[in-house]
Image 1 (cartoon, chains in turn orange, blue):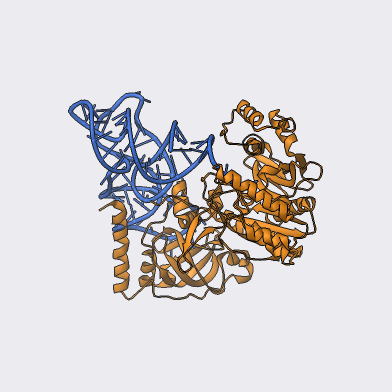
Image 2 (image 1 turned 45 degrees about the vertical axis):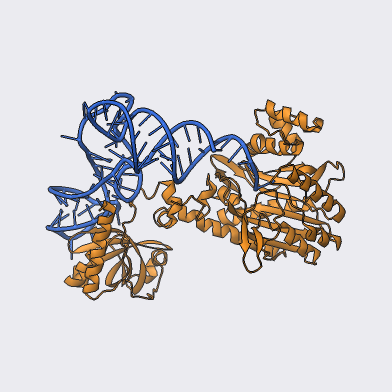
Length: 486
RNA sequence: GCGCCGUUAGCUCAGCCUGGUAGAGCACCGGACUUUUAAUCCGGGGGUCGCAGGUUCGAAUCCUGCACGGCGCACCA
């Protein structure tokens, strides 16, 4: 028997004894609390001496003979319980002493202070609501092993207050996004997660199958094409917050499923979307952090608008010395990439190489919020061409702390050109580019009915949460990140 | 997929370089204790050193393979 099993057996034996003495710790269906623990702390002066009922998990026990102290933890915080033999009687007191760290109990008692001045509930009666059969992680260090933190997130949440705070902030961030968008008159919608044709991004999809229809379906890589159909349908300001799925590598910045917000706004261009983006993110930070300034991985960042706006080619030129305005062929682009020490595939064209250099050599240096503007048309099959330079699109990406957090453009609404762009993507696909966009005839058809000029935006919500919680890995902001099964 | 690093008690970690009976704190079990809050004090139990091979008289320690995890690269928003 392993030592872990021995500890488990000890607890099972305790459970059996409890049941034999008529206590079934799993029989309770509710426990009526009068206050949360942080409420008692905040309203001590008003509640002192009153009888009240609390519940939570025992996180520490300190026995001192005929008096015992326990740290009780609920969702709001921690408070001390004080159990006295004098108050409880010998038999009940011994049952209290028999409790373990990890047990979930309800207690009624009077609010008081210990001799050392600690706010405490002086227990009059208590109820075991759930017996813990496994030991809690160590009280002082908590869980450090990242594998346990991700795989057994509940232990992480129980013992690491900073982890709990990250996920509370995540919820606040998403709430703040909704507040902002709703206040701006946008309508939140839901579109399919299962797509017959995966579209709206350049990425590999997950495949699944519908049995009754005998049809392959793809988990969505982006909601974009459905949201634009809604603009065709006459809605003018829509957004969706939801999960996207991409069958690609895992990294500190990539999880196979991640949360994205997409926004579509009729009759405005990407300039308006830029303003929306910086105002939105500024609002969220102030709402959640109380300030537009924060530290991410040692860098002081200020989200106060307006953010820097730099042409993509200028940014690449500034950080690498390579001027893509003067580089027209795929071959020249490959040479330039090689000179920067980047490996490129022989099939990579100029557009892909620009994207590659951006991601590897430029993005990590964009610490203060920055819009990069003017993306090559080859890597932007859904974006409208720039009037000044038809080789570029009216597209921007926003970078903060070296992370790409937003991608947006004036949406292509010319059905003929959209069809041609899809056909070009099909050619790339046939040439072996698995991420090239698939043809979506129904979407082209929708554009043929007429889509107003529209600005669109995508925001990587997980990355925004990373920034505002100073988390180095996307796994720190996703409750259950994908791991290999044990 | 490739490279580097990690995996020792329930948890946090030492021990590994330089092979010689596997350690500490917390947790757990028994005892003392009516004001602690990382309680303290006395005593005790607990290990397939990630897994499998190899080298060796002898392997937690050296070598190889594998698993899982982290980081980087590749891939990719």
